[in-house]
Image (cartoon, rainbow, N blue to C red):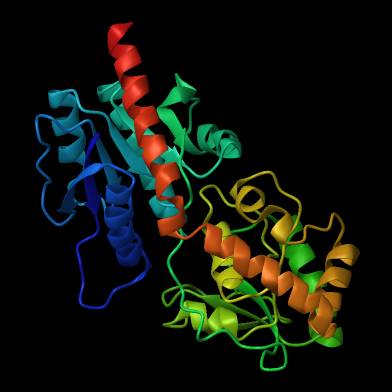
Length: 332
């Protein structure tokens, strides 16, 4: 299978997406794919004999790329983004609806899990004509070195990840976050989250909010427990936060959900059904070194399984699914 792999332009300072793009190239080749690797800073050339295009980059030339693929009869799988910026998620959905209307049966969207189907339709503003346009593709994760992992006694505090702006979450979620953070800050340890550099302040008095650290992985690794107070999101940015924490051997506690978070973290994290139970689990993991050690090991192993090099086979099979569905549609 010949794959045109489009990833983000290579930078001097390599970040998560750059690392994943390079790993995808190397690992997909090892699974038997013939890879043509392109950067997203210029319109990629789609070879006549290409079987599929996998877009895993920015959207600078995505419109042109989709049109080229449709003209050549080559299907394209677009990585959904799984980003933390809701406006980018909305842009991706608007684009996909437009692509699907203009070029039916050529454009596919990578989603992190089957449960994401129920997020996509309302998010796009209309139900999809055919759910086969959506292809479950492994949610890839950047590599994190093991040398920086701290021990139980070297860690302090509870991390709650990215703290949303005022009005971004439902009132019921904010109310729960306030209750949990109040109890944890009083009984367990400091509760800390971060905001984006251009984000407005958030009125949550029991959470210490800092500006997004340059090295999020190391920052996550300085905490003893990660608690998701905000629930699920549409494309899994909360999942990536949880996996970031797990990669640094941080136990993860999250509220009940059936979305990408539950699919990716699952039983390697803890999902209490009530607020008081969530507090109890976080308190136990924070205070009991044996409990923490067991949960820490599960976290680390789960994050390892999501590394790009370990999920390359799943990506190849997803690409083969795209090629197969596209051929079936052409025949029908």
